[in-house]
Length: 403
Image (cartoon, rainbow, N blue to C red; front, side, top):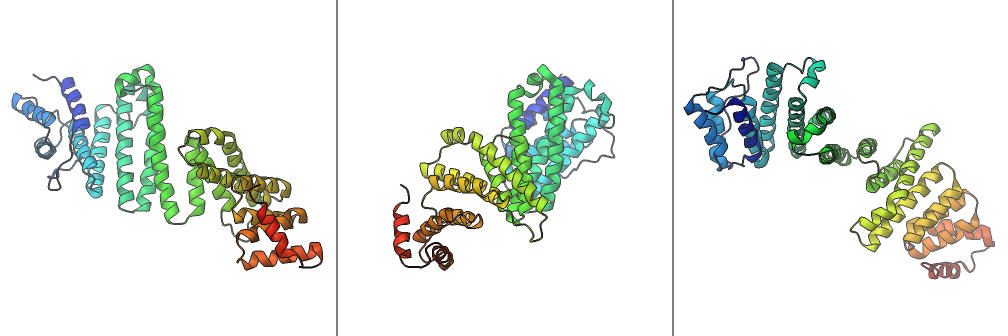
């Protein structure tokens, strides 16, 4: 006769092997009832045979029907959460969002009730250390339920529910990490992975969750929200050059109210520069590893230094801004906006030796831009006292581009 611990192991294995049913697959008609007391799974030979048939069934449609039969036959089984977890796995692979959410809600509620009833430590945190392996399994499964619900709500385009379950999932991730730490060397036996492997799983899960929220903010054009979530992502991967550059650029370019307090502006620009400086430290190694073209590499460098230029300019450090824009121009010399911004820096610092050639090169690259032409004429007139020779000067500066 199958022993209870062997049955538990087998049921755990079923969760990992469950397949995806066809579109017409049955859904359980029995839902979890937290008011009903748990009862042991009956252990007669016939009942165990039914369980083993479910575990051995390869056909996902038949497996789903067998799970439904078991849910009907044993609606208050102490292993009900295992049946519901297996159903959730099938719905996860099937991919229909609302069915997946329903399955996750049922599975999570049953698992939580099982843990409370059998181990009693959810309401008594001090007892957690007595059940580290069970706590890890529970928190890790809870995290997977939440993660699947976030993905489902993203496909249903329900941003409020996405935010709600991302917060729950991140809290579960924190608690799962704590459970993993308590297990120490035992974790590999429980979870099949060492500390380094779990750290990668945890990191990837957090990045998925936060990136889902960031995509919502991008869709809503919520600049402040995008920045806030990107900074949270950097807490997970602090040396990620792409995220550092994204955060630095977003902060420097963020549209602020016209009456923004000077102290607030300064703090925002200083944060932008902090991220940009960290990106500078890692960008060479990033470009060596990244599978991108030389043109794309040049674009990364131009964005990085133009962001530094914009931030330092808004702080009134014109010398640092000019130096940064020159570095950006070295990376992409044919970008007119960079020459134009260098010209703006020169004009604001009353340095005609910077402003005049910069505006001339910008005008050479976009000769039909009336605003650049007007600004150039004004500066050239102030420098030379006449507009004679301006076009020749523009051609001369243009010819020097890239040299």
